[in-house]
Length: 269
Image 1: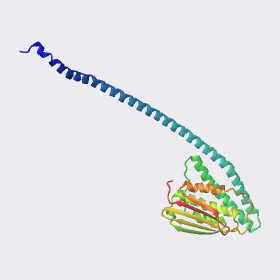
Image 2 (image 1 turned 90 degrees about the horizontal axis):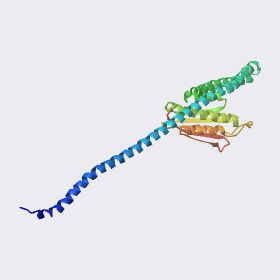
Image 3 (image 1 turned 180 degrees about the vertical axis):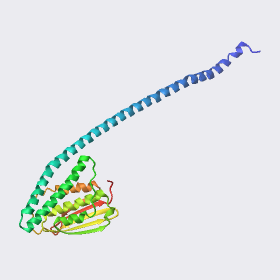
Image 4 (image 1 turned 120 degrees about the vertical axis):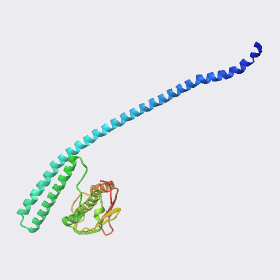
């Protein structure tokens, strides 16, 4: 039988283990609580930042919507202004040309008056299409058919050689319209700056690219006084670059001028 004194050494040996287990029991709930607090705090910060981001995106979308409505209203106003001013002048031109065709006694004058009247009527038709696009707010122009180049050449009144290679059906509508405008603007410049010159138009339609080269010889007579601000070529270059193409233009060694446009065969409409 053990005495009371024999139990004294046992107590110090058992006390450290009991204290360690008690510390774990106390510390474990505190660690869980601290983790819950941290997670809750992070979640609060996340949802707060997300709420601010959603609010900022919503306000930005509303501002863009208001700006788009303002642009649409401005397009409508400009379309109405263009229709009122330009069509009035074109109608007067067509009426005077028609009257001159009837009253003129010279066959050449009558023929020139009829060409002027026809060009004015075509300009009125194209202007109505543009005004309709601006008023509708849909940036969708009517497609330019592949045979419009031959019609453009026939109506130009210039000495023109047109050479076309490849299949024009592979060209997307946006590229086709741009190519048409390149040729049209180039012929307008020939009219203004190179009267009497011969013009060669070469169009090559490949599977991945389209190239249009308009080259005229030196003028056979001195051109009349016309402004040489270069805005036509500048706008044309911007139009070509808008569909991912490149345009170079400049004088040639023989005194003429050349416009060279390279366009991708397809761009999304």
